[in-house]
Amino acid sequence: MASPALGPIYRNLADIMKNTAAEITKEVDKLRRKIRARLPKKMGDRFDTEWKNASNTKGRRRAAAKVLAKVITAIEDSGEAVNPDFAGAESELLTLIDMLRTLEDMENAGKHFDDMAKAYGS
Image 1 (cartoon, helix red, strand yellow):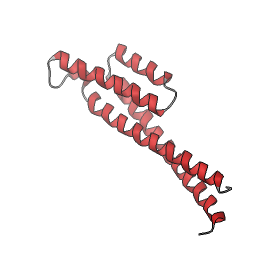
Image 2: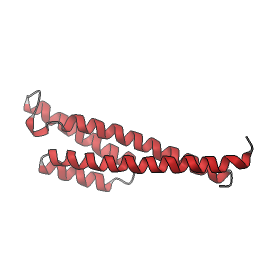
Image 3: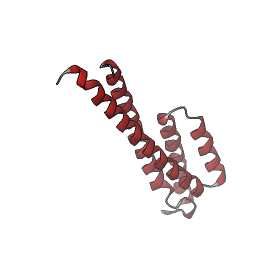
């Protein structure tokens, strides 16, 4: 394949990755709001603060992991296998972390293909 044809292909791939990342971001936001509603006020406020202070996807994933650790600790401290205060929050936080990993991968792939498109003149 000739090099001039690669630029538009890489540009197309970059656009696909960016569009996919945008859709994943919408779903991440929906899930984050759902998790926030399940958490006690103080823990939810702290989650919101850390989420807003995060400058990128990796920082948001770190914020979700911190809240997950607090939820697990709260469940263990209560001595109950299933704590009604945190019903579903643990599994949803794990899902959110996985979605944020996927989002980060899509963002990295989009940047990579964007750089390749620029390198090939598109």
